[in-house]
Image 1 (cartoon, helix red, strand yellow):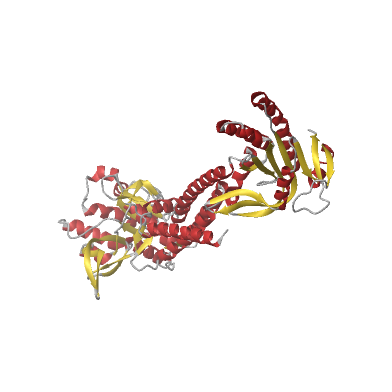
Image 2: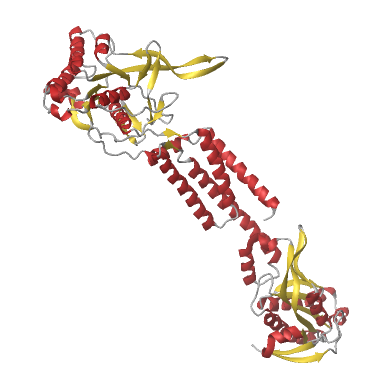
Length: 602
């Protein structure tokens, strides 16, 4: 492939890769990429039973009425878990409900604080309200979408006897919950850890374990791998069961117990990465966060710029490989590259690194489809050009082989090849034409040329040109042929036989007849597209061609002159008569033998 063609192809590949990389960089692929990442990464699993969700569910709503409930209900639930069997109390009780400010029922407030203090294992919720604010950082300004404008903390008596963590969740732009907030910087409070992290660390303390390291993130926002699907942590135990004392409290011994909203209408359900169609209750999401801390598997998202660079390089390389390839080859490359990327994503994820799943496969798919379209259009144009170049003067069987070669068949230039060359001219035509009107002359010429063309095509030859009433053809090019010499001689014999009937017709009609003089030679010649890029002819040049022309010039009407090279190849398939060197050909030394082809066996 020429250097200029390679450079042009490379420029196209780089430009296409740049466009796709820009699309990814501007976030236009974030939605579908996130969905693909969810499908690949968030496979879930089976919780080990260490975390149990007790629902503030429909049965509890039926028993205690709509929310908010009197605080003594939660106090009774906590008291039952801790006091029914003090030696078998839960390791941690997490209450995913905001108890902000005094309720107006001082006794109930005091009761809840007292029961929470007794077990020393209760963690309660707090929450921030965010807003967007313009923030000045030195000489620059930026919009902070996570400015804390309000802070809801437990009322003082409860806060004094419990630990607290924030329960804020932030969905991605497509409305799916994939991340968690490890901490929030609250004015006047400092850095407040998440509800799930506080519970996890309390559990480690209770179990005598060293906590796994928290994810190292600059803004507190981290990707959360989910263990349980909606309902995985909920075993149909209701707060109403605790208050009524109908569930065995020893089941919760040493476990993490989470109590939170678990009924429709409480506005605490979210689509999550593990299941977009079945919302997950907030308390279950907290359970998943705790399990992620327990496992220590908290993968980090890879650097965005590095991934964009990888996308650019892979797309440019893939398009370079796709172009000018057969569809099946491109398909195999596409499947291999896309499959390799997905496999790399899985390997990286298991190693704790999150890659964009869809960027590369989608880019490869777009480029594969585009390359197939471009290759098809290019092939169609090349096919049209080949047909225009060769279609009028080669056999259809040879045309099919040329179409398989594609653009290479149209390259300007030639190569040395052994060919059989045939020249045929009409004898006696000049005298006849002098006595006939021009339309009749043209009609006779066209009939003779049609006859010669049909004989050439019938025997799979390449019609090179017409020069007046002379025809030139050759065999064994543009594609190699078996027994090219025999085919050329068969065409010559067919021409002589065909001219007889036409000659008889002319004799009857005009009182004059004509015949063919034919020359056939075999040898090396330069064959190819010769001319200029905008005007080229597929032809043969060289001494072999000149000799065939001179044989034809010396052939009497109805005779076929051949060279010794042709006769030797035909062997006993031909009847020949040697003329020795009785005919002198221009440019040929003494001893050049010429023969007449008298007959040819089928």
